[in-house]
Amino acid sequence: MAEELKVVASNRSARHDFFIDDVFEAGMVLQGTEVKSLREGRATIGDGYIHIENGEAWAENLHIPEYLNGTWTNHAPRRKRKLLLNASELDELAMKTREKGFTIVPLRLYFVKGRAKLEIGLARGKHLYDKRQALKERQDNREAQRAMSTRGREESPTRR
Image: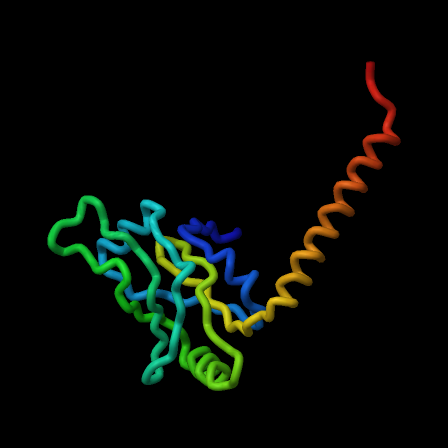
């Protein structure tokens, strides 16, 4: 039985701007109004980043807007949020990010079994020529698919 994911936000530009080497699923320490705002499907993670500080992972600049029906207990939209990872995962991420060229980026924010999860990726930055190459490959694949689909239509008999 597959787990049902309710995706709240995704960072589509991350896969364009970075090579994703490894992917981790992290829990998040959230306040009540943050969870309510996420359940309404309101979040932006495109500007966010993750860093390791004192053996803990922190997500910064993730925008979870204030809950509309919240009162004085509302949260700050861009506050620093702690991520929950295993010690081995934290060690691996800390070791890799010390190397030149590696960073940790948020990929998706979703709910699994009622719990908010953040999918993070260990990433290396792409150069401009890498981005152009990826776009060219994607465009070539689309054109090949179009050619195959139109060829299949031409050969099949038409109904009258």
